Length: 132
View 1: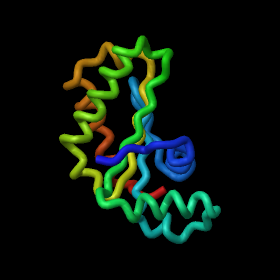
View 2: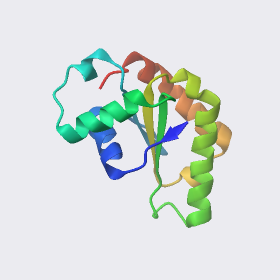
View 3: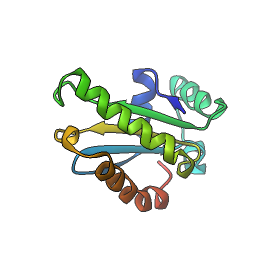
View 4: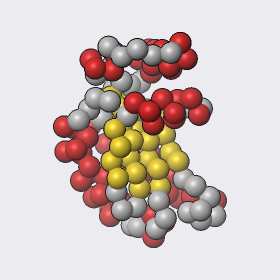
């Protein structure tokens, strides 16, 4: 499982991906192999980012965004560990996809099973609209 490393990669997904809003987190999804994405005009910097995604050996990318408003560092790290655990378990459902989890207030009080259920509830939406 690869991770998004810098602001430019996050911005690329924010700009070109689909947004799904939940009660405790937002989900940004971008299928980088979709034909509609390949036909778009991109700047040099965006082309470079897209090619790095396409040329990666592993075709699943994860971005985590947990604000300091959510809680102290142990709480934020627990949330990120849970998101990573979910992605390790279900990454096969998202081939050639980039997912960004943006945590909202209250997510730290969620149980893992509740979080998993909410994310899996997004799957029909994500599967139906894989393009940007």
